[in-house]
Image (cartoon, rainbow, N blue to C red; front, side, top):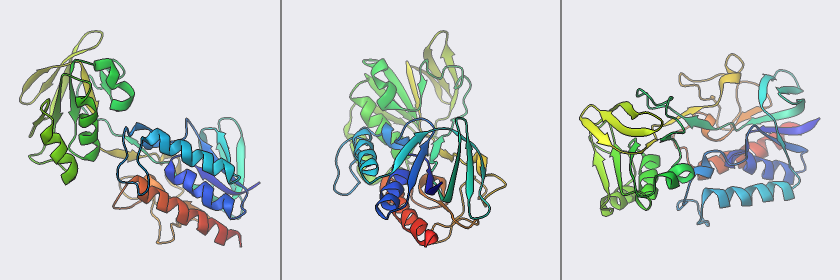
Length: 293
């Protein structure tokens, strides 16, 4: 029996573990794959106060701190939850976990862009992570689909590897912040194609070209960065979600179920950044302590 069960080992979950365990709660983080979440895809983090480095470096430090604070990390995939009453039960693939409070920090996953061949060529030229797969396209042409900060960061990273990088955005203006837009303008091998929509991939064993509404681009790599979708499927019908599937919480991060909190990218919020995820984790960890007492 745990005092606090945290579902998800991203920065929100790890921060919650640090705060809960330091407060004396018997705490466990349950992660289905590997700790880190979306942060692992960040080649360089520049907007997290007091830290400069990669997402991997930040997560390693956060995990080490959570463990040294007394938290436990278990790898299991939660398939079903029972959140009513004073004892919460989480059924995983490997075992069943019980606790007095639950902090949901399951994060979000990349959305698909929706062009023909996206699934078929995934892993064979189509990717969602430049840091993970960019090296496969050294000296080749590649495209990034999207117009936000993630798309800009992916393109900037690829510009140091690829011969040329296209940014395809369906609107006439990027959503990326000012600093990133200025960096894009300074890279001679980045070309932004506005009002451009991907239609289908051409290729056999791997990507050879991308057909758009404005013509065909000969390239080898396609990276999608068109937003996120919350990993909240197992909570449908059990917690209040908004129309996009994000978990509704109050200003104390409480869900509609007593003793159950949500933190990070999976909850309804305006700004989804590492710093706000960490803040959510800290607040949720403190709330879990208040619930126990």
